[in-house]
Image (cartoon, rainbow, N blue to C red):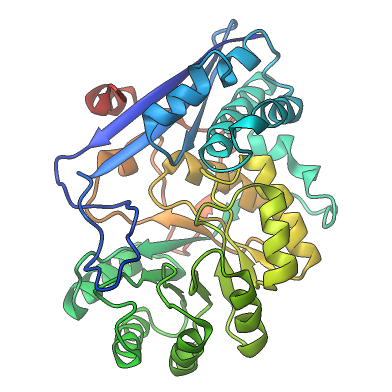
Length: 400
């Protein structure tokens, strides 16, 4: 079997205009994210001469990913004619051959999307789900224990412009879907970066809604400006027993993360804001002394690279809780990873506001959370999901 082409699929849902993924400004007085017109998602599909195709996804503008893939020195030129089942060799080929593009950032996201699609193909060709192909890759903790059949998501609640009543409504929706853990996001000009009393009121409200039996995560989105502000706020909200506090400081302030980790018993989590590959995460673990790393399946470099990050975290006694947000092929990938990774207690699951077919209906079959708060790990070949071609046809756009 040989790779014949790599397709970039740009999808957009701007029927509602309310933002769901954004690039925040860090200017003082920022009132929140500007509208980008809804969802803009990028899907990558790898085709072969035997009619087997695989899908992946990355978080970057589709026209940028298309250029990385289809340029004369791009990923498609590197991989056409190659055996798609030699996934790790091809990942290394892509990584080594694109170093002049920067070795990080959107190039790694594109490589990860292609790698996920290659695992999808390899699983389909072998008649096995992906997690059973890469089961023993987590060597440190490998044992005779079989992969999990069910794994546990947490739900992110994104409340744009929300007041406490809206927060109650949206957290209540997440709880009604039986999740065992909820993460609330503190947005600039709304909850985060306001004052400690406001933060306490918001988090107290969220805890009262989800109760004491569910875990509560808090995403600060890098809005606390320094270690002192972070520590004052953490001391005030520690009473609500957060499972972790995500991205409390600007992403590059690794020394600040070290000081936070040493000063508080609350878990500090970071990793989704542009961090990629095991190399960057190893630096976070060594210097930042993090309790939780959050490689994103659509940014970090692919499925096996997340396993590498998780294994490094295991060596440091840290958890690996992947970031996903609205990228449902990333969710599919993380279902498989959570089944075989002992230090991955949760992975992110999108509870979308506003709802969009690009989140809820892009894949077939649909995701389901059981009343016990778990999701079934697919036992179908490959990732176990296919694109809903009706949704693709309706929302596909020209990335240029």
